[in-house]
Length: 233
Ligand code: 6PG
Image (cartoon, rainbow, N blue to C red; front, side, top):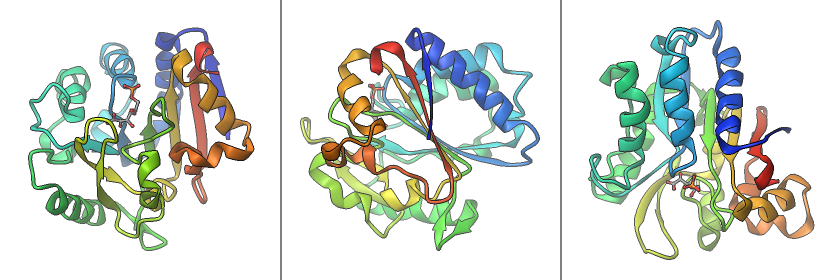
């Protein structure tokens, strides 16, 4: 596990963007899963504004770690935010964008997306293997859309599953724990004081941290990296 602590959320995004540029160099094909929520917006805008030439975007295939079950133009859509802040500005062609169809029937879409992963990613230990998965973490320690009330999704055999937001009841599609831990690299980009207690518990491996889904993300053969701002640690 490696931890990078930056003074501000914006600097954490910039520091990860710079790390990613070096990590991506020379890789002929990158299967990258993007996180959702609000944190990655600064990263996407920074990538689009300052890394157009210095990252080989033509080698990158975009997937998502989770999606809200809403249409792709809905204000809560993770795809919509990434599309507006990163994919459209960089002119990423549709054939390298593999969005989760939030508008679909959730159980059928979880099955469909699992097939998309199996058809487009290499397999490792019988599961789709991402080169990198970018994750956020909620104030309850959830990651992707694996929430504390649905810990079984951490060991779910299917690569994708239907999840339910505990407060709003919103249905979501999420990658499950075994796929997250099958990636070569997993990066948490987490900022803000509201998450500091949980981040510290998880990173320090404190006894009760396993009640948080994010504490169960530990790539079997890959690297786990945390990019934080000072407030989050
Ligand atoms: C989502 C995300 C989720 C997110 C955390 C943090 O769809 O909401 O994938 O796991 O990363 O909830 O969200 P913020 O970045 O908005 O704090």
